[in-house]
Image (cartoon, rainbow, N blue to C red; front, side):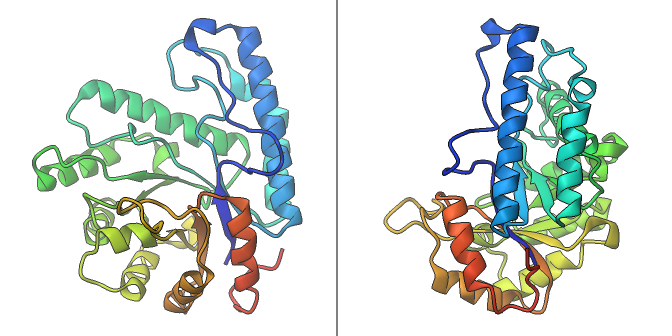
Length: 298
């Protein structure tokens, strides 16, 4: 079991998601921004390694305009040494990586333009992980997408589109239950049809349940992960008090997190904390899990 957080370390003073306006595009601007982003990513991962946080979600904005037609540069080759070095550091320290494209990545959209842009975005994410030399346990997670007035057709369209995705994308793609439209049961249907593993989002299951408790839902999701996929990835958060339903907590509630650890046994899981204060809550969660025999000691 590894514990981590997504995208941004709030304490080290840099971001790996630097970008610029499209109208300011130039090769020089792009390469300078890429160097800064990769340098910050390396600093973030070193912080995580030092503090035993062995699971991390890399920002989708690592490569500016990566899937946009304006970017025809061979950035994978230009930064091959950087990507390779990051991947080597991750492997040597038993760290796991994921990525999560934004909400506009919708492979079940009936709009052909949205579909093409979504595939380009998924290819970009897969390319980053491939450039790092990471195996298929490094995943790209997406939601099912929209219902578009007919949930059954929307699920069927996802299956059809999934089968036509490039192989490098399929080997990394996982689908997660969301907080409004598609439940764990819906995602498990997709697994039966096309084999994609199901990432379990505990908070989304609380917001959008399918009638099963956390332990049962998590166990059913865990069964969809094969040996080459690694152990089940889970997203964890809780409700922010006084906020709209579905709002992620600002800081971790250790009592709730400890209860989740208990419910998740005996399954091996890697936990991504979608808590707003990022590494601060992740370090507290790590301490709370110290007595758990599943924990990988970094």
